[in-house]
Amino acid sequence: MRRAGFFTAVLISGILIVQILKTLKGVFLPLVVAIFLTYLFSSPIEFLAHYKIPRVVTLIVLIIAFCFMGYFGVQVLMSNINTFTERLPELRSELFDAIGPVLERVGNMDPDRLIEMVQSSRLSEFATSLFEKSFSILGMILLTLLILVFIGVTYARYPHIIKNALSGKRADEILDLVKRINRQIVRYVLVKSFISVGTGVLTGLICFALGIEFALLWGFFTFLFNFIPYVGSLVAVLFPIGLSILQFQQPIIPLIAVVTLIPIQVIMGSILEPYLMGNQFNLSPIVILVSLFFWTYVWGLAGAFLAVPLTAIIRTVFSNIDSLRPVAHLISRTGSTRGE
Image (cartoon, rainbow, N blue to C red; front, side, top):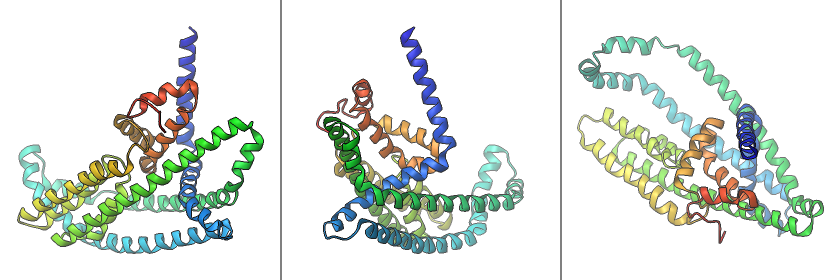
């Protein structure tokens, strides 16, 4: 009865935590993203601090540079998206021409009726929804930057606060745990960014060389979706492959796109990335997949991007708590936490 009560309490607590994280997404997500950006900015901030440059000055400069890069990147991306949107009716017509005979033979569907259904969809409602979401995303970005500034200004004092609040041994254990998490996150961001940039550049160059339209757009999407484990980059290359099928009458270009784009994703994601990452996170592949579904359910697409580092942090924390260390062993790839 005691074990059953304990299990029930843990289950109820877990459900409540998930619902709180999901309901208060607008608060927790900017906080988590700000913490990750703090990890990313901490190395240059501390490096320049040795040369007597104030941390807050370095942080503000990094944020401004980050915003400018994002602004110009969005401008270039929006230019490609606008061009793609202008071509969309023509591409849609080509798509219906291609799949119309198939729908008639297999599904006994009238292609003209399908076109009417698509054209009569409520585009105004979709545009309104997209407009509202854009404002929501902008507000979340501003909140993230605000939290980032507060964390960046005060994080250098956290070791002193922890040492004053806890006993010497316990404070050293917590500081060591924070250093390990910091090392893991920084290495993950650097390696993942390197792999994602390489994959995106190669994808864009191949699309450009083959004459597939919107090569820059597909390269950016591949870079972005490569942060989603296992499925992200493979899903991203389906778009240029599908466009090549509509764009070219002969099958040779789509075939070349398939035999070049997909192997790049496999080589970069399944061979080069594990080699560079090593045993950094020590997470079981099935745990990564489950965490991907879980965090996507909780925080949507942003949760998919954060799934691996968040799960790795949880496993690292569990490995330092005696009662939860068996759980850390179960979700690890090697079945052990030694040597970390």
